[in-house]
Image 1 (spheres, rainbow, N blue to C red):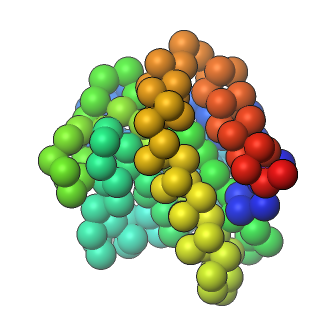
Image 2: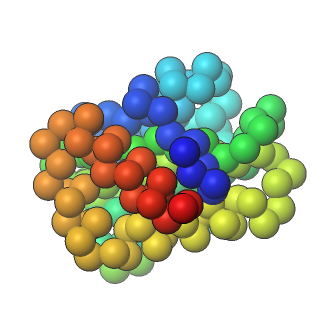
Length: 153
């Protein structure tokens, strides 16, 4: 798959949320379902990271992330929201694409490389537009995995 993170089809969702806290809860539950993790611990880790500053990337994208004990490599979750939600992003725009990332607790630069890979993908205008226009979870998963597979080659 990708040399920077792993994404499973079960970790991709279309959903609605009305607040930043609901988004973080959705991300935690998506990770829990896809990666067999404790959703309360995932949520706690994500909220701790948010206390340091919003992970609202800008351009309608949030990248909530944290380090998590017990993982062997970074794992991802992608959620497309039905309507944009305020996430305290640096550019002030609400988010409708959420790319969650959990990395091993003591992974050093691995976490930064995974974040950089997500950031590059979200800055690409064509990719950003394609993800925003994705009609279903299958298309969203395919877009992310195709670009990450291509970039890994």
